[in-house]
Amino acid sequence: IYATDNCIDSLNHAKSGILTRTPCKEEALRYQLSGGESSLSQYFSTAYGKLKLVENILQHIQFLRHDLASSIAPGSFQLVMCRNVLIYFNLKLQNDVSDLLFNTVTKNGYLVIGPKETLNSTRLRHHLELIDNDSKIYQKKSA
Image (cartoon, rainbow, N blue to C red; front, side):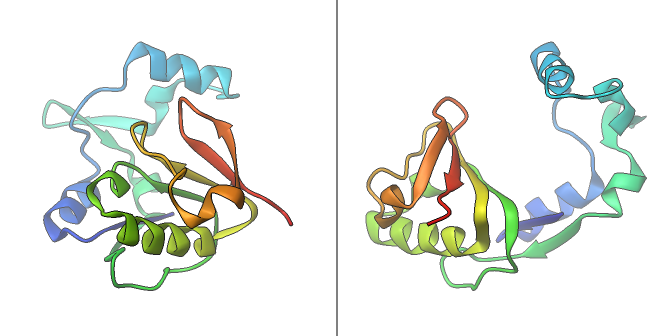
């Protein structure tokens, strides 16, 4: 898992594994409905009165500084999540960043954007299939 951000403070907070909020019942239910075999709580421990992601998961996450506006993609992935970023960009930068994200997703892979975001105005609108409008999950078309 690669977790990227352009803000060093955000990366350092993410590296700590400490959640800013406790997962709600709806998230736990979604975990179960998606095939979770145990409880969502198995992935967390208690630290400083808050939940912390367990170390055996944290050690598999690489936290990297990455500037979407001026960097190349850090690899090729089956799932790319870029939530609540595009809404802050003008149309040209949205197109540039969406192109970067598109080129990062493997064939038949998935791109997830923020719930208030859309790719309808970007050059990619014909190259991705909207799988879930509420969750803004797109799949890269195979052809």
